[in-house]
Image (cartoon, rainbow, N blue to C red; front, side, top):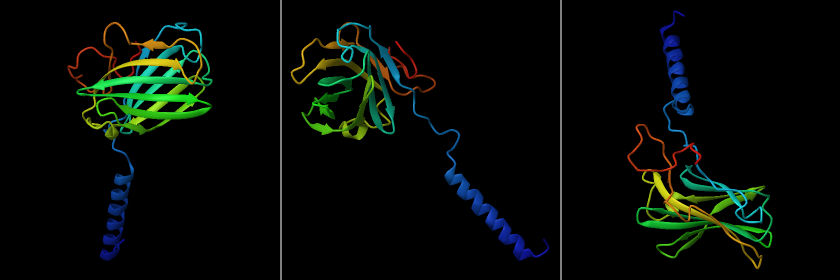
Length: 196
């Protein structure tokens, strides 16, 4: 290619393509979402399979606090799952509920008394609830790194039977939501990817 103008045009085209690819490709060092931190609960605490908690996982994903409840049997009807969460001066309850075959998901700010509808899903043996971190009214995605939590599953809507609780008695259970290296000196907690 002997034409100087043609060489300039080719160089510009190559640089433009490289710049476009640089915007489209995610950098290799971009931080991936951390795996959930998971607490196990003994089986057969209560008779009803959809109230008997087996595992609860807590994670931070897409700027939301995510709690997933897994129970021993398929989730039927008139049952509620609550995660009571505390971080710093704030405390919240994240609730997934199926009543009269209608599913609902709510965030209760226990400090202010405000209630906010949030997203979630109930399917099979699990109920998942997602609370946007900016709806917590305090922490941000960057500052929410460790939470204290306990959990409850219970029959509602006139359904009889016992409730099941996890981490409600005994030592306080903390969940670390970010697995930085070196790890912050946050004290004891279940780290992302751990099952305890």
